[in-house]
Length: 410
Ligand SMILES: [Zn+2]
Image 1 (cartoon, protein in one colour):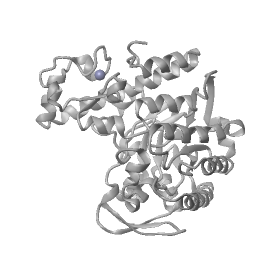
Image 2 (tube, rainbow, N blue to C red; image 1 turned 135 degrees about the horizontal axis):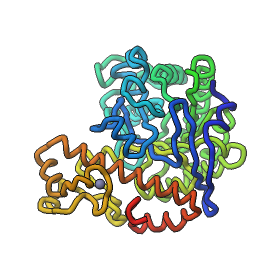
Image 3 (cartoon, protein in one colour; image 1 turned 30 degrees about the vertical axis):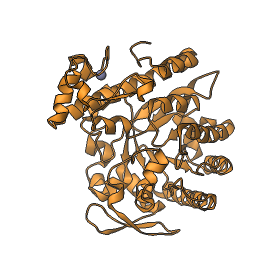
Image 4 (cartoon, rainbow, N blue to C red; image 1 turned 90 degrees about the vertical axis):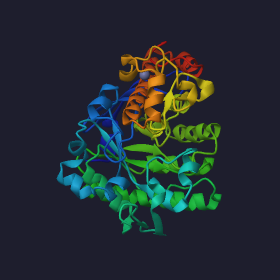
């Protein structure tokens, strides 16, 4: 069952910050609880790249995100369903949220939408290898990047795929509007997203798996009136939760402003609904997002940069990262981060060793850096949750922004 009955039951807000919209609590889902605010690592194709589910859980994560678009193409949602659904198939017993595929499908058509929308690189892999054939009110026809065959995705298809995967939270199929389009296009596109949401809700009411929540997606680009109207409309539509997506602007300041409009609009009657921010995961953006009242976040960043040798460190000037592929790491005996309790730093692997592994293209390097990066973000979120509970979010956020080490210096 979904709909308004599930709303109050799914999120319990246990603490609120007096100086911001931040809240901390628990999101109760079919496969367990998520401590919020939380970061959600990507398991786009059914794996958190280089890790096993037990390792992801041990780092402190309660939920992962799978992707309907990629799993539809490969291995196919029917196959996953035959193997017991995504939880059983990938052996992750905890909560799973699935992305609807809207972002990936539209990334193919808009070309650089992923970079524009999220400021940097695409959320998943393979977006640009396919090609859109047509977009109309029914849905999107596109060429698959796996076999070149023509495929079709609509609100109903996306819901069907996510039902077969059996995720705890399904996301509505939306049109992900790029940044460099006129306001009129953004407005029309946002209206279509709302019409598609109604179709998602209709399908889900009839066929959605028991216990699966459905989140609607707030669009509206960088236009305040469109964003606010979208937030109100999605909140009133009968969804179980709200995701904020689409173009969030050309820089962090604009992005924070756009997210703030949406969460401001979601106060009052919609306050009890869980809120997810799509594709955002930089350290400073997570801190700001929490202050703006976001409950869950997903982003490729920590795992993707790990595969390029980039390590998260408490260094605001260096955008909280350092590049171990650079020659300055060649002879560096220090660990990735001094005092880091993560499974890789605890063993004592040096930057010099990791630099060597990266140069030698040893897969172990990607795995060790992924462990470190996800542990770093997990501790950041744990610090923010604890600070909200203790009534010290302002101090903790200021310290983290100034370069305090999450979970170490606190
Ligand atoms: Zn570490």
